[in-house]
Length: 176
Image (tube, rainbow, N blue to C red; front, side, top):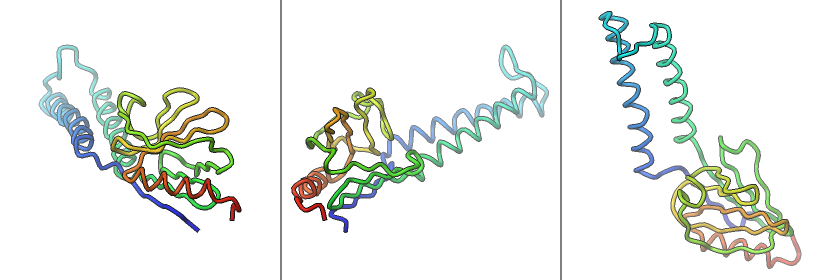
């Protein structure tokens, strides 16, 4: 039985805007260049690539951009706490569920942090081999410290509630 469950998506408006601009501006430039070089016969740029190279670049940008869009708009992070463990799913970034058993957790703390400066961004991020973050947005989370020294920051819009649920799990002596 679940004590706590939170679903999150990438919902930062400025990040969405940046992604859209970063995708559509290069596409528009390449479409213009392709039209100019392939249809009008005017070389695109000072050192133009071949027609095949131009088409290949456009196709690769469309494929790569589509994959990034898919990951960004379809990603869903689910954190669930029950009586014995914390379960983290983050499709499609984490293909298997990550489980943190209560006996592996040494300490927890609610923290306010800057994901960009501390972890280099959002998603599944590694600060070092011993510290990582799993987050979608915001600046609050619960830092799990494991007995093996690893630290995992779980980003949360309701970090205090997540911490309360984890404390409830940790204080459950029966492990039912």
